[in-house]
Length: 184
Image (cartoon, rainbow, N blue to C red; front, top):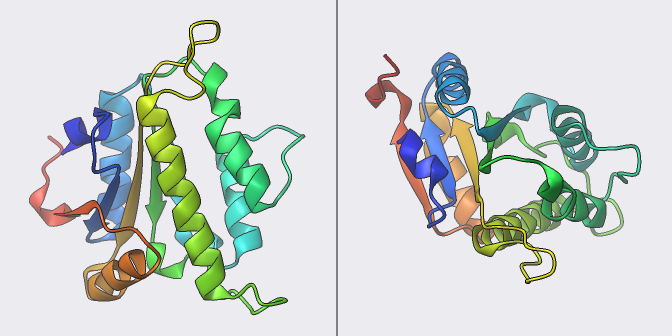
């Protein structure tokens, strides 16, 4: 499975189902095994609103001071500001995805559905852009790099999580059961 997270081909999204501790163990093993892929770990329970999600990404990915906690700011950092990094690819691990933006309030029409759709659209666009090379041209080449998003949920949340991913536009993803993976 970890070799799929290095590829430039789809799927760029993955759902890991199982215990959080097993997901953390897999993340640690992945980082150790693939040191040239920059891997980030996002705690879903700390991302219960859009604001907290954007702040968690900022903290864990060490966004610069110029970052604004908005969707356009998030897109800019994820699609442009990472390009100077000397990595073979990127992998974002999000634990307990079922909790992400779960407490989102309806603020001026921007409710849970809207925020999830925007987040999904941005992550799809980012993964596809990285796969072909960001701003790829002869004078300033940004070579293609893998960019994968790995969601996690507990077994009892699988049906809900799969429905949520599909509802907001994510239809190409694979599902892996953590108890079937060995990280020896």
